[in-house]
Image (cartoon, rainbow, N blue to C red):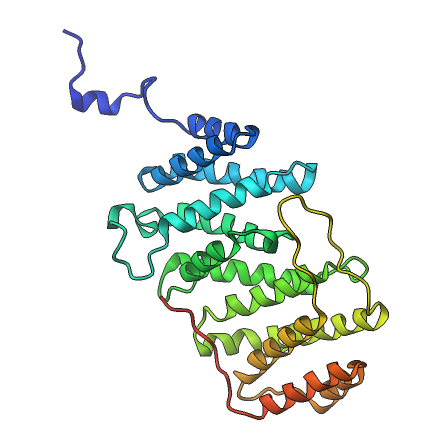
Length: 315
């Protein structure tokens, strides 16, 4: 009679099937509407169906959202807040530290590896954005992202750690000394430390040591920061005004303290490599203010104490 059986109907594409174009249309609606309630509903809908989507549907969606963020940078369109809110919705939906509250077939791990890779890449793009620290949802996104890349013996976590660490290396090695956003530069040092802490001690030592290793790069970054500081000690950080929230005030004492703590970590885990006397002399000579010299003396005292070791994140 020409009527397809239920099984045959499942195999025949028709106008009622969910397609990538439908998901992309939903996201386009989200970034174009000024109604926050509508945007929130779209975030929640898209995130709720992610575990049930095939790669062919999920990946184009995530890439389109990522592209929205890049357009914000290239064309002056401000999609950063909406992209970050989508990421925050992902983090809240799939945050399950005990592995007990989310059904297995609805968990982040239930998705295909390629989809998880794309989602974590998107979260990382938000975390490394110059305005990331202005987000009220920043901690939620960071907590989830680093819990995922901190998983041991997990293919996605290992792939993403390598990718994120490579991007940290690119940033540390390619800063424009004439146009440095000091708050963002410090933030990238902190993210570098967090990614390194996702590795076990042996792997951390491998990445830290040697010429071009992270210990050397982070030392050079600290030297570069102190040089900038000596030239313009009272200059504010380079940062465009943001309408999203109040930009955290840049604090030099905190910036120097954080960098010295990171330096202690990356040199402290190494058995055969330590800061040389000429390196220490250079840092001492660049600490012009009495308060800076006091911080450096505290750093030296702590460096002679028990090795802090990597602060591994919980599974």
